[in-house]
Length: 61
Image: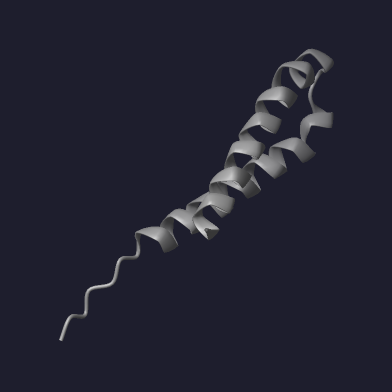
């Protein structure tokens, strides 16, 4: 009987969800930053958010 099971996709999905939550929290806390920091961080966070969502979408296929 083969009891092996590949948990890698499950872990990867879980890790992506955690990272997505972290980025979303960072977006929520942008208003606490200075204007210069917001201007520097917002595009990077939005880009990261987009990449994470794309990865999650790709795993679902």
